[in-house]
Length: 441
Image 1: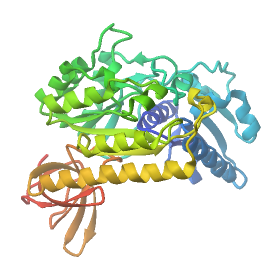
Image 2: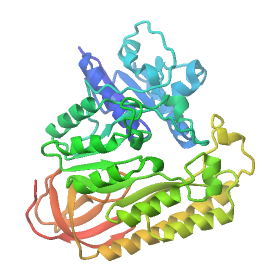
Image 3: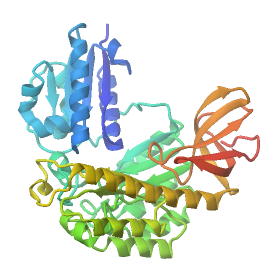
Image 4: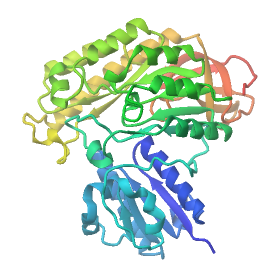
């Protein structure tokens, strides 16, 4: 009888992809897979420890799974960033676990689970092989990791410590995986990395993201291709032109800029040209929708810095933005900085920035009211009038940008596309109505 294995993935899409590789490796080695940890004989928890909240979520999840071990005969293993951070000290926190592996030794996971002797070196890295992959959801999109690690040295970030130097995956490998995903009925591919715009600089000695996108866009039946995690200084005109010239490439870029004040960007060790980059991009390529992320409450941040950020937001450069309170990490350079901002001040600034961005969103969606938009159907629920449908427009990334919600008398097909008319918004969800009764493939 084959043993059942479950993988619990925590953290960002990059971790999800890695966990899906692990699922594929386990399946290839003869394990039966289950998404129910209570039915599993073996549970692997793939952890994130980038910020305090992620670290706490990893610790909480491990404790929860270990509680099952007290009532059932299961084995519990931990992988990824938390073991990479704690190394052998993970046994001090969790002596009941049966084994662990860091980010650079994930290819040894099966041997660890099978109880074979393995040398764990704690070399930072990631699992970039995609020979085996089992998707963890039946949603019509998939993340496509194009690189691992990071060469930037942002003062608040420990990713280089956990994941090592930037390492691009070969274009041949990425195109091969992209084709396999589309052949398995994936309608949308989403490019991810710690920094997508640096793609190719390590193995091809030049910025190759535009060329990669052009190659992926040629995959037959690929409907949408989306770009996340673009580093500001890596944005160039070749990349922007490729996005606009290929119909199946979404006119959308996620560019986490973190702040706009030169005072704070300098302390963060982030590009001081960020403001000019965004201004130039929107001036010359106004059709491209931008999403970003901000950190508020960074050490040394003043009210003036926040006013500058809010003023920039009010100019409407971004349709979506995530706003995060600064997380003080003992392993980051910023931990030793002076002038820490009180938590209650951080919370107030977060609300102020979120409110400013929400007003921009409402204003922009109001402009689009009455406009036609093609949407990708992801889910639906029956209702009295037929079906309540949850979808996404081309200018929305999954999981972070809200949904398009509309009603239909016709039962929809998940993964199909439909033309709707935008009628308004509720929160960050966009409301719409059917333009026709015919679903498109």
